[in-house]
Amino acid sequence: MPVDFYSKLTNARGVYTFRDFVLVPGRSDVEPSKVDLSINLTKQIHLNLPLVSSPMDTVTESDMAIALAREGGLGIIHRNMPIEEQVENAKRVKRAESFIIRDVVTITPDQKISDALELMHNKSISGLPVVSDGDRIVGILTKRDVNFADPNVSVREAMTSEVIVAGPEVTIEEAKKIMNKRKVEKLPVVDKNRKLMGLITIKDVYSRERFPLATRDSQGRLLVGAAVSPYDIERAKALEKHVDLLVSDVAHFHNTNILEAAKKLTNEVFVEFIAGNLGTIEGTKDTIEALDGHVAGIRAGVGSGSICVTSEVTKAGAPTLFAVSQIAVALQELGVEIPIIADGGIRAAGDGALALAAGASAIMMGNVFAGCTESPGGLIKIGGKYYKPYRGMGSMASRQKRFAMDRYNQPAKGIAEGVEGVVPYRGDVSTVVEEFASGLRASFGYAGATSVKDLWQKAKFGAVTAAGVDEMRPHSIILPGEEKI
Picture 1 (spheres, rainbow, N blue to C red):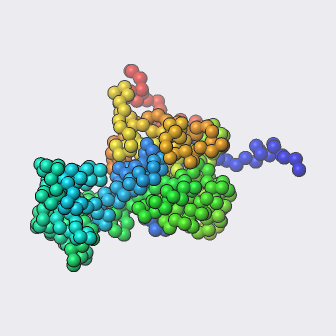
Picture 2: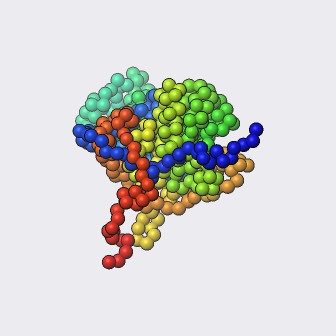
Picture 3: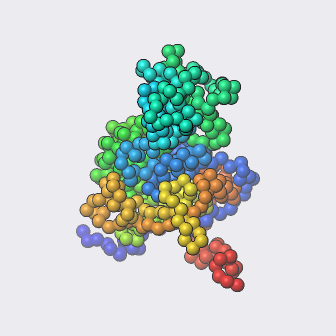
């Protein structure tokens, strides 16, 4: 049967981007300050803000994940590193805050002060419970104890032997009272035989009050996710005990080999799994069928990121706004509720609002978070202004980095699909998140929506022409720094 090549053009579907639409204002009695931005990222994970950082090596390591979780979002640790390093990044997030720290770093009385100093430095902690005879606590060693001690003496000679402890049933308020009364910053939790069960720190107690919107697990620890390749079951198994979800890190998930690999992984690893990236109705339906109930969420968008050149190089892509709508339609037709994460091309809060209005539950960003203090990489000064490095995971530099080759080192991936450069320095995560969340709430207010689900129902889209895009920008005015008057 001959191919009707002409119809391929005349019947082409519209593939839209954030630049093509606006939210049409509707009747509203909604005050932006009253908008609820909380969402379910998966069936088990609830976020107070619909913001997720991209798993890129210039965006998300432990510092970013900690900062974003404290603000109510979630960080996804990138996989462009050895398995052990990725696991350690996840552990740092889990150790950063917890009412009772369960994964306690300890030391024995016979070790040297130099050993303690090394542990404190490597683990970024300021104190060590001293244990002996099967984790029975016999002392505690703090920075104050070791600051002026001889590195060659034993821990026993420098530790504080009289340790104030609490039982496993202690509450936050009780722990605070004990630490305030006894003037201690660390409170070991022990059983009736003084066996160490955990550790409470004054920093963690007060952090809960300082960050009331923080996303936490059942033990009070910050939530964190990690990126994996569907082929890398070894990495997934190493991570599953330390993260709250795994995120597929694949440019084109709608591939038979990848679907088969993901099915095997989700049958062997027992932690929630977010599939992607996807961009079509067909791809979504095939993924749901192949993974048979193991899809906790879907990353939407192919080739939309600011550092992605997939669509330019290959002329293949599914822009994020289009991808979100396609996936939302597929899920409705299947009659299943699975959260969608809009991933790529989101420059400002207005783009995020469009993505949410089109059916997304959360927004994943790389460019925006890459410019934050907490992203990997130092500040770069150019022409009196500060920038931070940013590169795509398909860039040549990222491809060459160890353990990143599994995604791109295939015969069909012999060309770079990302670029590298710098982005303007934006400040710390809390400042950026506050500004972005305020923008989202304002957008919701214009639409008359009080929540993300309400926005799905009430949002109305308006199509914008190329001339309209220009008109919506600042115009007919000379802005400071653009040119001399």
